[in-house]
Every structure is written in C-alpha cells, then in structure tokens.
Amino acid sequence: MFAAMRQAVNDPQAGFCRDCLTPQQRAAARRCEHCGSPRLLRHSELYRLAIAHIDCDAFYAAVEKRDRPELRDKPLIIGGGKRGVVSTACYIARINGVRSAMPMFKALEACPHAVVLPPDMEKYARVGREVRDRMTALTPLVEPISIDEAFLDLAGTEKLHGMPPALVLARFARAVEDEIGITVSVGLSYCKFLAKVASDFNKPRGFAVIGEAEALGFLAEQPVTLIWGVGKAFAATLERDGIRRIAQLQAMERGELMKRYGSMGDRLYHLSRGLDERRVHADHDAKSVSAETTFDTDLASPEDLVPVLRALSEKVSARLKKAGIAGRTVVLKLKTRDFRLRTRNRRLADPTRLADRIFSTGHELLRKETDGTRYRLIGIGVSDLSPDDKADPSDLVDVAAHKRALAEGAIDRLREKYGTKAVETGYTFGKGSRGRPQREG
Ligand code: TTP
Ligand code: MG
Ligand code: MG
Image (tube, rainbow, N blue to C red):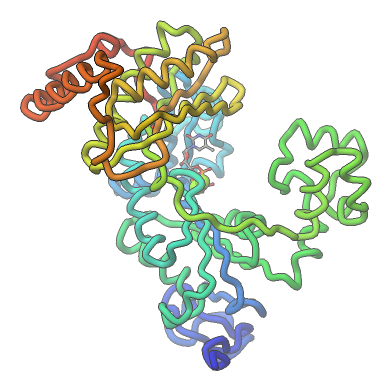
C-alpha cells in the first residue's frame, strides 16, 4: 500500500537542485531548470538511502566569520592558548597549508597574513546545540559524534516529511546556512561507515552520496587509512605486510585477516566490503549529565586534578538541580596525553544530585588513576538518570552525608541569592589558571 510513497519523487538520475530543491526533469542538464544553480544532486539510489552523516565546515572558524563579517574573505585561524596549536582554520587558510593540530608558529609560517582568534568554547557549544536541535527535529535517531557532527537515521521518515531523506537533508543544509549562518557537509549512504566517508568527500558545502551498487568499487580504490580505526600505527603494520589499498583487503579471506590482525581483522574484512551493521543510536547526552575540561598543560598530580574534579562536580550538580533530575551511577572520565580514554564507574545506593556525593565518589575513583599518568582531560558525570524525588534520602547511617547535604542546600540558596562566586568550597578556592578549562563539554 505504500508502493506509491516509496517511489522516487522524480527520476533520481535527474535529481534535484540543492539550492532551490526543485526536482529536475532531465538527467543531462548542467544547471537547475528553475534557478540556474549548478549544484544538482543526482544518483541512482538517491531516494532510497537514509543513513546520513553531517559535519559542519571549519566549525569554529565559520562561527567567528559569521559574527565578524569583516573577516569573511580573510584567512582565519582559531587556536593559540598555552598549547599553541591550531584548533581549526578556515578554508582560505587551508589553501595555504594550515591544518588542525599544527603548531601555531608553523601555521603562521605557512600563512603569515592569517587572522588568529582564541577559541570561544561557550559560543561554539551553543551553536553546536542549535544545529543539533534542528537535527532532532528531523528524526529521533540522531547520534552526536562531536561538537559539530552527528549521524542521522532517516529511514521511515518519508511520510512525516512528505519527501525522501535526500531532500530533507538538502533542505536542512540550506536552513542551517540561512538561519544559523554556518555551512555543513552531508554524506548520504546505506551505512554509517560510508555516510561518514561521504560527508568528507566534497567539503565545504558538500553533499556526497555513496550507494550500495558502487560501494565495493569505490572502496577498492581507497587507501586502508580510510577505514575506521586504521590510524598511523596500524597503517604501518599493514604496510609492512604489503597492504596499502582497500582492494587488497577485499581479496583476502576473513579467516586470514582475523588470524593476522585479531578483532581488527574482522573489522577490515567487513568495512573493506562496505558491510557495516552498526545502528545509529539516539543521543547519549540525554542519558547522562556530565562536565569535562581539557587542560592547558597535561596534569598528573592529585593536587592539580582534585580541585578541577570538585569544580566539575559542582557544575554537574547545578545542572541536575536545575533539571530536577538525579543520577545513580557516577562516571569518571580521563584522557591521557596520548589520547587514551579511561572511564571508571561506581553505582550508588540511591540517585544523587549533590555535588558532594558526586565529587567524593569521583575522588575515590580518581585515587586509583593518579599513578603518575599525565592527563589532558578530566570529566565527571552521572548516568542512570531519574526524577530527583527519590534522590539523596536523609541517610541515618551516614549522618555526616546528611549534614553535608543540608549544608549544600544552604550553599545553593546563597548562590541563588548572591551568584555562584559568593560561595567557594575548600577545593575550588583559588585553583588558579592551571586548571582553567580550554575546552568544555
Ligand atoms: P572538525 O569537524 O574535525 O573540523 P572542522 O569543522 O574545523 O573542519 P571540517 O570539518 O570542515 O574539515 O572539528 C570540529 C571542531 O573541533 C573544529 O572546528 C575545531 C575543533 N578541533 C580542535 O580543536 N582540534 C583538532 O585537532 C580538530 C581536528 C578539531
Ligand atoms: Mg567539521
Ligand atoms: Mg567534525
């Protein structure tokens, strides 16, 4: 009965215009029959694909250019600070060779006339949320990957939108441009792996489509580093074995790949063939409340880390209290200087929304991790969320905890009255600049 609906709105080989969204009549025309734009989107599977990856273009730089139109045609670098590296560069600066994570002095050697601005994380987080809110208006299946990107599963939304995912996405990209003032690139495919690859394909303002029919052939031509999880080190291992192109992986048996590379071999087998069964999972943010900080310089000692943990716990607690929710599992997150992630959990007897409980639990977890390892990031949060009516019962066994809870209530009221700076607890007081957040989430 849905046969008519599943039918393409027009011949997908004629496609539609990404600027005015008008379906086209002819497959050969170079410009839109309606508005004359050359940005036509065509693909034999255009109206059948529903997994998308969307990533903002030169995100931090795009936000700054939006807010300072005088910088529009100038090379712009966002970065600096104590780390002295480039966070991102606009596409004009990239033409001159500037890249993310490059030391600032090198970037300025490559592009001496670049304008340099420090990052304004609060602003980027706000804009990132605006973009994400627009995504969740398209489908509940939005899986954020970072501040500026997410996967979307639009399968089954055609009836709701009255148009297939490809058109919904093009309309979305246009709305973000018109109404938020930054640009995005879209990748559309049948699986997450190839949607992500596609979104990177013709940045900025890109829209690339990778269909099932072409996946094998497309992948064959690509280097192994395209595969998720194949970083520099693993690529070097493959190179030693004479493997550079995905075509070579396609020619190998699964058993052999697994024998050689373990579980990674299994991934190589599947992804090299465009086989990726991973689902798009809806926003994890709603399932936990957390705060984190990336340091200006990597930190190892409890004296440095504990005050930051305290400040973050208070932030989490404030968010929980504001939302009227509580969490039962406390999660500590650490990232080592070489980007390894450590997460440690502890489940409490009851849900909490108190900074003191979140902090003391996090502190216990942290104690086992302060073994001299240097960390670039620390985060604390709670999951297993519930309404706060059962949170922090007045616990007769732990009288001290109850007293602290009462004190915290009093502190909250003071802060409400006089502002957050009015009351500093022992740990956060005078934590100085070392723990000052550079990046936050
Ligand atoms: P990306 O999406 O990787 O990069 P981008 O949006 O700047 O550029 P594009 O997607 O068009 O290639 O990262 C998003 C933001 O994250 C970026 O604007 C700045 C920040 N970032 C860093 O701070 N350091 C980094 O090394 C990278 C890669 C990104
Ligand atoms: Mg981006
Ligand atoms: Mg990104």
